[in-house]
Image 1 (tube, rainbow, N blue to C red):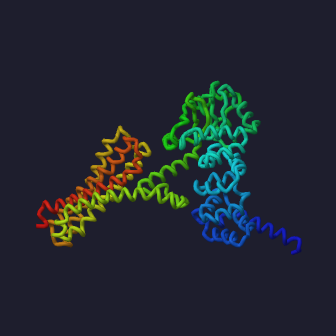
Image 2 (cartoon, one colour):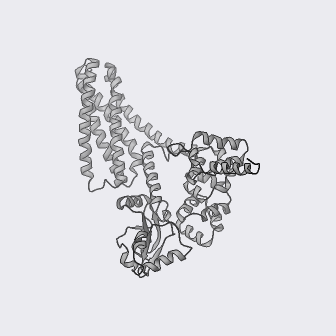
Image 3 (cartoon, one colour):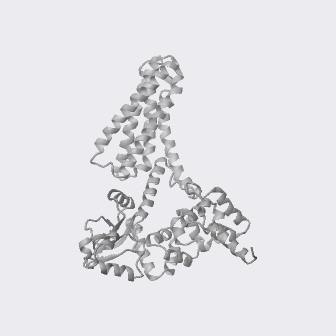
Amino acid sequence: MSDTELPELEAETQFSENLAPETQLDEDDRLKPEYVRSVLDALAAGDDEGARALVEPLHPADIADLFELVGDEERVALARAVADLLNGDVFAEMNDYVREQLIQALEPHEVADIASELDTDDAVAIIEDMDEDEQRAVLRALDPDDRAAIEEALSFPEESAGRLMQRELIAVPEHWTVAETIEFLRDDEELTTDFWEIFVVDPGHRPIGTCQLSWILRAPGQIVIGDVMKREQTLIPVDMDQEEVALRFQKYALISAAVVDASGRLVGMITVDDIVHIIQQEAGEDVLRLSGAGEGDINEPIFDSYKSRVRWLLANLVTAMVASSVIAAFEGTIARMVALATLMPIVAGVGGNAGTQTLAVTVRALATNQLTQSNTARAIMREIRVAMMNGITVAAVIGVGVSLVFGNPALGMVIAAAMMTNILVAGLAGVLVPVTLDRFDADPAVASSVFVTMTTDSIGFLAFLGLATASGLTG
């Protein structure tokens, strides 16, 4: 092999390595730990070119994941090394906290360059969390058309369809023929390139139907669009909450939907790829709120996590004192029979788990509109029946077990009755508390767990110790 062939071979080898991103990913499409370490080692050694060569083959979503996997100081060094790879697609895939940190390190004109590459909804996601002064600086650096679109989006409430929608869409009048429409799509270079259906509008720019691309491609050229379009459509008001938007997409199996203003004019569209993100975000928020963990993001600043969690721990402390006061009222009963102190946490603990199960089902049903005023009574009766069946089963097991272990059938009957009572109360609390909070326009995912826990602990202790006293078990 000649010397002139060696550089070509080395270049070809390097090129083939850069085209094999699967070597950086495991079977679950996650970045391998050894790959992340190799990038960090290159940064630590001051080899920015080597770090960039390792990152370049990655998909934008994987580059975003890489930034989320490294620490704060390493993140800044990595951003310097791969600055030319940090395009709009990467920022659009990035975690909110990580993106905000990197955006703060960029100049306004650099942020504007990134925002100009993105659809309106993704650009808004980058700019909306910036300080007001920084927002104005970025907006001044944008082209007038982009600036007008983003300013309009920022005027809508947070987490509304107006923030979520993108302005880039295809709209045609119904009197156009299929041939005219295809020619329009081919010749106008300013049109968006990512769309699945065309919106048909009247002279007032109000949507009157939709037409899928497949229909246009298969229809004869002389056919008028108004004859092949679908007139039934789901319109999204511009001020609709994003969670309700996601429910409509899920219910009606939408791929995209038109967004209209108060006068019914077409102002944007929402696509299913944005909705997948919203569904994941809203579901995660509800789960984390149930536990009082705040936003629960591992990239969230430590002090923010502290503030969001400590208030619920303090609230839990207050409710725990309520349960403690119940125990204190039966101090004499417990002193006469120490076995009660051993067994009473079982009653409260199992009741708490039963309440949490019902609470999780109810909060999810409320969030997905499965539980409404129309079927609340039926849902309550269902949970009562489930609680009774669970209570009978668990009560029988604990009653027999305690009778055999302690050699005291009366104690077994008391704990069985207390367990039955607490599980039934837990089922009721698990559905009634979130439903009541929802009726008063409070978020049931945030406050329900505190009240349900207080109820099951207090009733569990009260039922067990009260029955033990009333039955004369302790003499």
